[in-house]
Image (cartoon, rainbow, N blue to C red):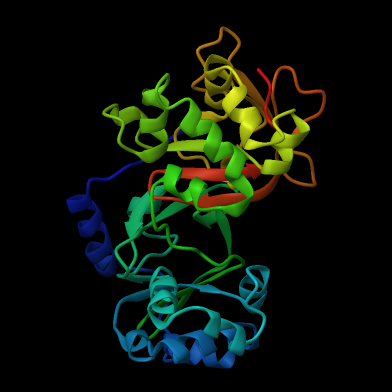
Length: 319
């Protein structure tokens, strides 16, 4: 996978410098706020902005917003304005600021030409990953459904998925999920034998090439189906067997679901045949191990962490 990583200093230059790039699309007198108010499918976004007290933030000049639709909010369980109150004020502000960039970013921005996972700092200081390819314009793997809506004080990009800001490294993100308890236990079990793999998952690896990775993470139900029904089963298993198994689920580089390509990808397994097979049926990407009878389905794609992209899958991948 081609990747374009910029140092923070250059990254900041991109963000501030983009506003100087001439865009052939003439700005309209409407503002960002006008677009959100006048577009019915942004009602939950508008309600969230009001609840978070961020109306003034939308008055800034040279502002880029990746604007999630109502369906994007509903897909994450926020079906009404009242449901947003489940988030604290700080959490809601952090969520919304992750959709804002202080600077103009459009598909015509020179730095984005053929970019793959270009890191751009959001206004909450977390990183967004932008890809501009022949198949479309993507942010964190999600396709931008309507790009380059240039307005008086910036640009609006409509997106069909809610961007969740990464709060921690990949390993901590895995351990925080209730449906990945057996996986977390297995990682703890192999930590002495494969400290290098643990360092890749938590982002502390000294190898610059492995600072970002992709993890296909089996659910507890997947582990149960593979014969690891309880924590006792995990602790009784050979650490060597678990290490070989888990390393077969991790791939170098940050690969969002929209970037998966049909074919084979190399894992961190030390086995001779250490490749996974990716397929792209119309129902969505699948991944298959050498010894799996059927491919695993990605149940939840593009879970964000600071150093890894995590795809939740319904089978344990067998080398």
